[in-house]
Length: 411
Image (tube, rainbow, N blue to C red):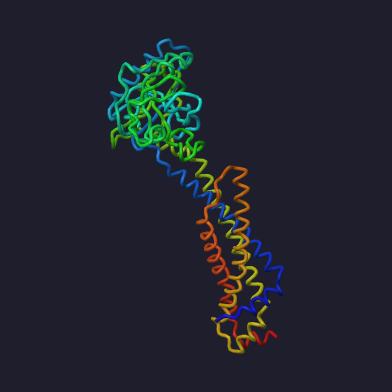
């Protein structure tokens, strides 16, 4: 069994060097814990389920040039032509999409009045079978009937049109909040005092800017039966047959729209995979940045351990030689340096975990991040323990290789 007394005695003689290394390890541990936590959160964000058929969706954004008196009729002509294209299962106009940075929202409740619970939900505006174009599943109820669709010719008519809505389709998440444990189909929904009948419930659909609302509200959404001109809402969403080329579909759709009305601009033509990629670009960049910071800190800490251990090996050549002459084996010398390093790293980890909690408290207050999960702490501790043992291994092996005769001649 290794005697710790000579190790502690040696460390007391090198308080400054050991203390600096301990502080370096503590700082690395604190930053590593929070970096791992932030990386985990970003990875979780990348895995969010949109609720749409991402593999087979493409979107076209366009706008008009000048004044268009027949923009609403042109929109319906566009949709009919897009649905007739080869490989297109369904095409719809939609006011917004999951994984964009702005959204139209409203508070809704299951009953009218001032003293009721309102739930914030996003509003997807579109015509018939929008849910089918998105690739969502209709869990209960039905689609909008043709007489329920409301034409909105321009932005000035938007508020008046909202007041004429009498039917709505909502997501399962919102239905569970409004009518927990019940079938929401046929029941009323209120924006204020005007009841709107829930005619259908679809599977969960991710709302735009979902991170701002948190996981409890990220699927609270509703479909409103409103047909708008492309000049007001310029999103045409196409759902393709499996195996059909998205690039070919986008080119055909763009050519068709330009033929139908040359006086307009195609702003963007994207697959949903590209939309997801663009939306999470900042998260991926943050993962790389935090990963690089963690690797740099670990590398600096490892070099610090190697440098200090190498210095101590050189400084203690005489003591090592004496111990070897008195019968200490190479394994004893190796274990000595590894144990010494383990004590320093453990002290740094203990201090680092305290600093990690302090840093997390700062991030919670400054950036509204959640509390640091305890699972992150043992991961960081194990990483630093392994790093310490690997970093000290080469100097320790050099110390163990010093022969007693050579060490004695250095006296």
